[in-house]
Image 1 (cartoon, rainbow, N blue to C red):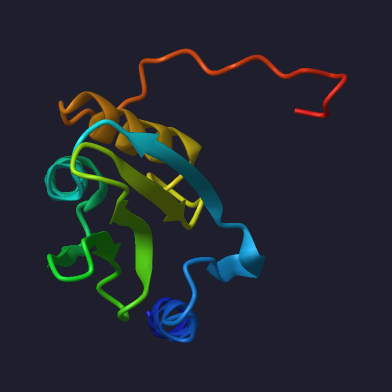
Image 2: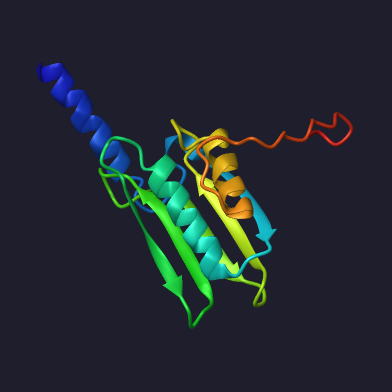
Length: 146
């Protein structure tokens, strides 16, 4: 019992120490950036809804963020219950009245991985919250190293 308690305490301390970085665990964060054909407020609503339905997890993590109409930006993020560190984050900025730039970042652990990030992107792009990515991924091009 004491060993289990020590392990849980060590994990909590480790997560709390990463409160300023989306990429704990050796900097393995994954990112994605794209433009979407909706205003920044709608892009935020889509990100917030998908995070609440799919990325909050069952461990008491929370979703926070909001819209800054003066700066024409928005942020949505899932916050670990152990600290204020985001597990996944969407930063959104208005390009004009009909387009927004979106930058996503995630821990690359658990549901906050490439599949989760792809589903978040599709939810923002298509306006329907989905917990799984359905669009095919581009094939790697050996000439370009991707």
